[in-house]
Structure formats: structure tokens, C-alpha cells
Length: 57
Image (cartoon, rainbow, N blue to C red):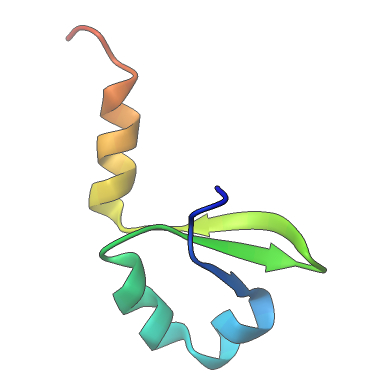
């Protein structure tokens, strides 16, 4: 997570549209009170992560 772009919850509230567009290309770590709380990512990226752990039908 060290190389992942980060944003605070407050920034997410103010710049939602911009961060959603950025999350289409790469996940964004959302922090709350200075601690990692959420990861904002596209559905396609999430699906790829979910499927990478499956080894069969």
C-alpha cells in the first residue's frame, strides 16, 4: 500500500468525481484520522483481484 495514491475522507467528500476518475486507473487508499480505512477502486480491478484467488471453476 506504500506506493498507492492516498486521499483523506474529507478529500473524498470534496473531490468525489475526480477521485472516482482516478480510481478507474488505479486503487486509491482512503485514510481516516491518518490511518488506512478504505480502498477505492474500479469494479473491474476488484473483479480481477477476486478472480486471481480462484484456481478453478
